[in-house]
Image 1: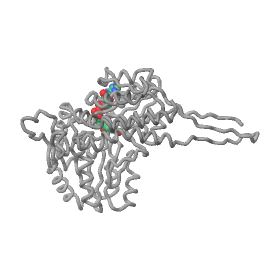
Image 2 (image 1 turned 90 degrees about the vertical axis):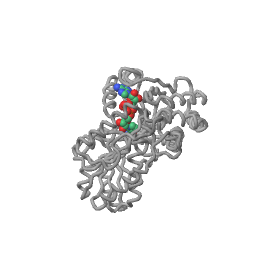
Image 3 (image 1 turned 180 degrees about the vertical axis):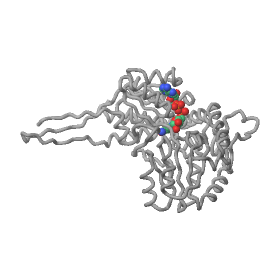
Image 4 (image 1 turned 180 degrees about the horizontal axis):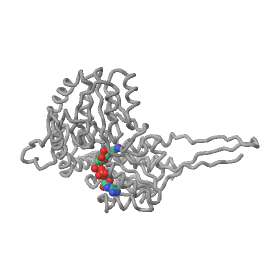
Length: 426
Ligand code: NAD
């Protein structure tokens, strides 16, 4: 297909997702338990937008060309040429199933590849619905493929070890990333990895306190804390520490947990009973490690009809030592630890004292300080006075054990194509 034909087709796919919006919404909420109010604002519209945005970026991508001098003075012309890589394995997690999967499938198809998608075993529905949409829109057979199954010893491992797969793009846990990287080494296949995080939030005394509390409510508790970019470690400058903790506690106390279809709820249950066991084990560990539980720490009473669900209380801790496992390991639940700090240097060292390097949020009204601190934070993304504000043209990804490579904008086009330089002697 020509690029223009592909772009037209992918725009149709985006339109068709929006036409079938309610079906996608219901499928995503049933699989994850997240509120309709969130998925209708984020997961589904942004999932559809991924097809349009990357098509548009590709259409506006210039061709690289360099003129080279030669001894005969006639020169040579170098022309950059991009080819699709071939078959891309897309291995996706359960926390934002459609959104994160299409963030890969959109650019991969725009660039002319075919994809084999392996959604998480927890959240298979929207990847399947998307296959129906692809068929309805006339995407040729074999271009968008879905295989369902588990990871190790199942569909995931089959894909990553399959020699007909030319490149693997993965979003999930850092440990899984390591296993996939080992599999990709056989045959030297290219990889892109978006992995876990233990992201710091840094609140300076000169912040707009209301904005900082509001932003932290989202960054620590949105999607029941199941966001890779979420804040699980908060550092608050000492003069405002007590007030910040009190304000955040009051906001958490007012959070409403409930069924996804209830428009008034802030979040639903965790994704699964297995994940609930994991998060609860960290709630217990926090107490064992010496935490003061500011609020939460257990399982809410949702009433007889609902109590079997994977419900969990939003939780805030203080007073943990810096080497506590609760501060060092990704929990992926609605919880955060808050620690006071006294200086910029101290908080930068604390923020960087982690194996992860995905995202950070800084709250201050002093823009020189914001830039100075942001530059020293070891992470792929730093938000200042905001969180999860995404422009699809920007680089997305993590450093350290949070990832390899970047996606988004031209970085995606880079990963999903093979660059060839054609040198023509004139
Ligand atoms: P996971 O690693 O358990 O699973 C992700 C996917 O990998 C699933 O489809 C799973 O079946 C598959 N898989 C597991 N083992 C495999 C193997 N050996 N070979 C091939 N495939 C395998 O992650 P999860 O629990 O679904 O998602 C939560 C994690 O994802 C958290 O760590 C979170 O931080 C991370 N995450 C990162 C980003 C990011 O952009 N950096 C975004 C979302 C989630």
